[in-house]
Length: 166
Length: 174
Image 1 (cartoon, helix red, strand yellow):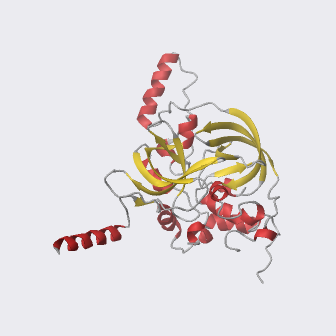
Image 2 (cartoon, chains in turn red, green):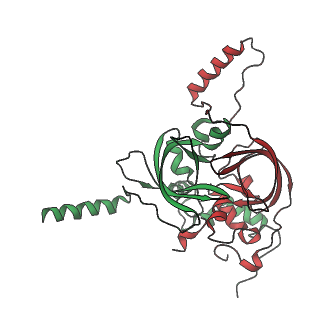
Image 3 (tube, helix red, strand yellow):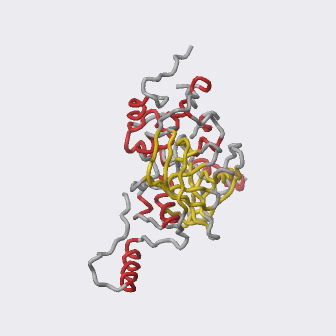
């Protein structure tokens, strides 16, 4: 039973040749044709978010909400690396406990099993980006990591290394 | 007697197949969890939310979810495999309709779906969401605990230590 309670191609923006002499309408038609061919139809629900600065700990989302272990700081660093590389969504948890699920960092759209994100597990960071709220989730598109203090929450003395002690 | 044999045979087939055709989500007693079957189309989260799309839903590098018929988008965050998400289970269904059996966790901080089984045919069986391990072993070889054998994880932990601070080591166990 214990075992079950563990945590557990980049896109290019579509860009028409700026030097072309196509009209706006013909450009849109061309975009639709191209997107139909390559299966990249833009969803009707795509939205604009709002600009935010978020400060908090890079957290494994699953361990945080499952409550199955102590998912903060040094005690959880190793587990958070495993979960991030396993493809579980990574969030930033702020001081109030709000979670902001990261969908991109800079030009890097890889939000699953991204070693760059895994290396920041349990770091205290401050980021600038775009916040999109949808169906109970705060999605964060990080533009810039303004500050990375590294791991500063010392929890291992009290909780050991989660979840196995090593 | 013949009916009894038929039932036995059906039970054997059911056991061997490792799949179930009924609601199968196992409770984990996670706060705010609810067993549900979600029906929807597999989509790439960044594409769905922002229109920033990539071929094949990102080819396994992006978070995925289900777009339900009422327009609700549910991010699928976890599979049955320890420390692993559900992308390998979903990526083959990019743009397709599926049914996903699992736990919807409506935590006030975030709502996520933990998928336990997937099927494409409403009359068919749910296939356990366990593909991560098979895919990982294809790339890295057999391992009892994939997470301890993962080369990338071990590189990161070797560089910064298991506590994430260079030079800080856990006390030896008594």
